[in-house]
Length: 282
Image (cartoon, rainbow, N blue to C red; front, side, top):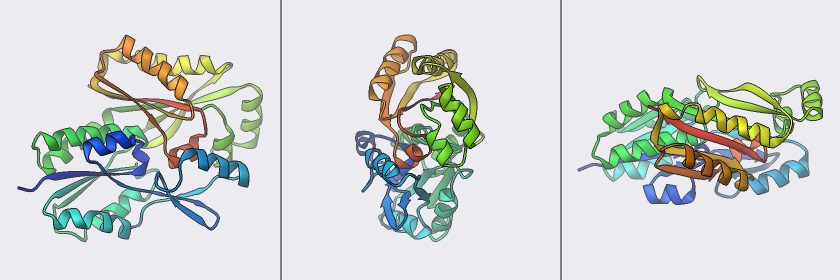
């Protein structure tokens, strides 16, 4: 009897332990500095990314896996007789989903389902874990896909960004905004809304204040949280992530609160000391 195998891409930001324990297959995106091309999570991690940004003074380019990359990843699983559900980075942010669909069309109809997460980071990761649970419970590819497609709009993702430097370098923040934002110590809150990153608030002052706002925003929704999984996702902010995890565990009934680190693609847009809270609504 065929099984359903769950695939995703490196922007899911799941830990190596979760990926291994749940048998998740990862197709990496590319991180490109001039003539150097790296596979996200394979031969480059955020600490090296930040070193190269400091060294070169500019952000890398990022690129989706090609259709050939997806075809190569999918082929052994299809030939083994199993079906695939792939859940990937929002199509508003990347051509990853488009390329996965091109690859899926090269296999018999119905063997590879491609789902646009309408999200990034562990907003994807949370959907992936739900898909794995459904597959392990015996649901077929169509049933898993339908469940995940109904869940995409229920995912809440919010980050506090510590510095405007990376938004400025990436062209998402003007020089004037960068200057006055840095001068006034403004830290933006960013949410994923309708598949895209959207700045929803600007917290002025100490970092603790911004972190408190992020936590308050999540706890204000504790009564409508799905209590199965919640992620604290960070980039070089382990102590603060641990504090947020402790607060979430104290004030909610979530069973599994995971702390994970952002990969290079997300880190290249948000910068160091970013902290995010990700959960599903009931």
